[in-house]
Image (cartoon, rainbow, N blue to C red; front, side, top):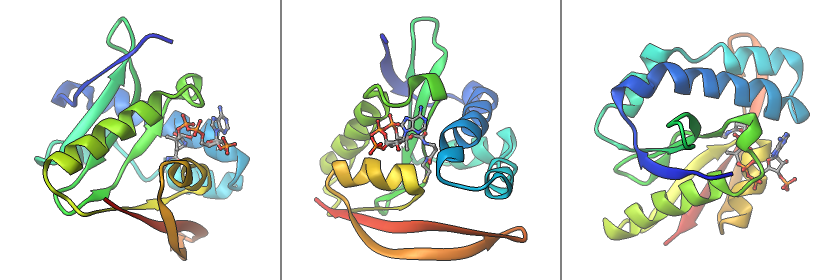
Length: 156
Ligand SMILES: CC(C)(COP(=O)(O)OP(=O)(O)OC[C@H]1O[C@@H](n2cnc3c(N)ncnc32)[C@H](O)[C@@H]1OP(=O)(O)O)[C@@H](O)C(=O)NCCC(=O)NCCS
């Protein structure tokens, strides 16, 4: 699948919110219950996502030939990765991996010493391959639904 990585633009917010929901509904259904997927997918809107990605952090989008988004991710000034999502058709093809590599390059260029994230089950498997370690499992409630993910970090 042909793609390139570019900076996030304000006009991406709607498409990225759709991508987020599709990723959660299709990819995360392997590891999480229907109630968990509903709570997670329902927690995003284009407005909220656009506000976060447009707040000055590093935000990158992998796009295909027609500029349709295939994956997106971010990097906050303290090394936090808040988002990493691949469209279901684009998952498992190295696109999120290339996006992550670009985020890590930005971090290194800014002399960051630590990257950290809260990873879903699929993301835990992904970040382990990228040299992250699990710090702890996090159990919490989303709406009224029990949820879990993993605090992970990588020293640069
Ligand atoms: C996390 C994510 C960006 C990784 O990108 P990717 O291109 O899928 O990365 P990988 O190919 O390394 O796959 C990572 C894991 O995702 C899962 N996965 C990948 N493609 C999948 C698909 N089409 N359907 C179901 N699961 C899939 C697999 O469990 C895989 O682990 P494995 O290779 O050990 O089996 C992507 O899987 C995704 O968007 N997941 C849903 C959203 C999410 O959990 N985001 C992180 C929030 S913390």
